[in-house]
Length: 401
Image 1 (tube, rainbow, N blue to C red):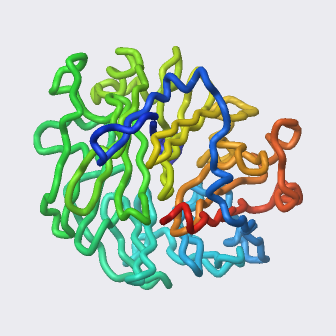
Image 2: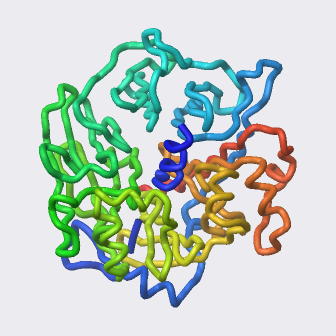
C-alpha cells in the first residue's frame, strides 16, 4: 500500500501560448514563460467559495487520516482515505454519514487497491476502479463487477458502455498492451494510441513510466493526458484520442528517455524536475483555460493557457518543505498552487461547476508563518487533530459559455 501511495502522489493524478492554425488545439511555450513569471488569472473565473470541514463525531469511522481519492456530487462527498481501503460518505455540509463501502472479501467489498472513484449523478452510479470496475448506486448498493484484461492507472466511464483508460506504467507497448485506450464494457477496443516513440529509446522498451499526468474532465466527458516523452496533451473521448494542446518544454534527452523507457524502474526512486527539466505532474481544465502543475529544479510551478487566445502564464509556487514532506502533509498537494485568488495557494480538480481543493491541518500549519501567503479565517481555525477540509470554488457561468 505504501508503494501504491508513493506512486499515487507522483501521478496525481498540462500545458501552453500562441494560437495554432489548426483550431482543434493550441500550442504554447511554457519554457519561454519561465523567464516571465507572474500570477495566473484564476480569480477571474471564481464566483464564490465554500469551506467544508469534514466533521468528526464520536464514531471513530468519521476520522480521516488523509484523502487519497474522492468524488463529489451535489449531495455527497465520497472519500478514499490514504491508509484505509474503505469509502467514507460525508454530505456536502461536511456531516459524517457512514462508511459506505468496507474492506473485505464479500460481494461489493473492497479487496484490492482502489485507483479511482467516479460518481455519475445522472445515472445514479458510483464506480470504483481497481483491477476490475466495481459498480454501485450512489447510496452504496452493489450492482456488479466489470472485468477487463488490462490494468490502468486512470480509468473513467466516458459514455454509456465506453471507458477511457491510461495504462499502468512499466509495460512496454508490445504483445497487445496499450498506452491510451477506449473500450466497451465487454472489453472491445474502440480506439488505441501506442505511438509514444522516440529515436532515443528502442521500441521494445517504449511505454509509460510514472512520468505521466492524467485527469478526468467531467464537463467535457473526457480524459486529459500528458506524458514526459513528448510535448502533446491528449484528450481521450468516447470515440477517439486527439491532441488538445501542444507544449514546447524543451526537456533534455535524458528526461525523454526516462519518461519512455518502461524497463527502467529507477524512475521510481529518482526525483523529477531536476536539471532544468519541466515535469508536468497534474492538470485540470475549465471551459476557459487549461491549468498545469509542474516540478522544476526541486520546486513547483503552475501554468495556465487561455483556450481562445493562447495566452500562457507561469507562476512559481510557494512550497515550505521539500516534495516528500509535502506529500506526507497531503497526498494531493492541495496548497501547492496559484495565489491568484486572495493570495491563498489553490490547486484541485473540476467536479461539475466547482474547482475542488482538499487541504489538511498539517499542510495548513506548514504555510501559516509564510508572509507571502494569506490563510482564510475558515482555515486558520482548523485544529491539528481535525479532518481534512474540502473547498469548493464555483466557476463563473461566463467562463463556461
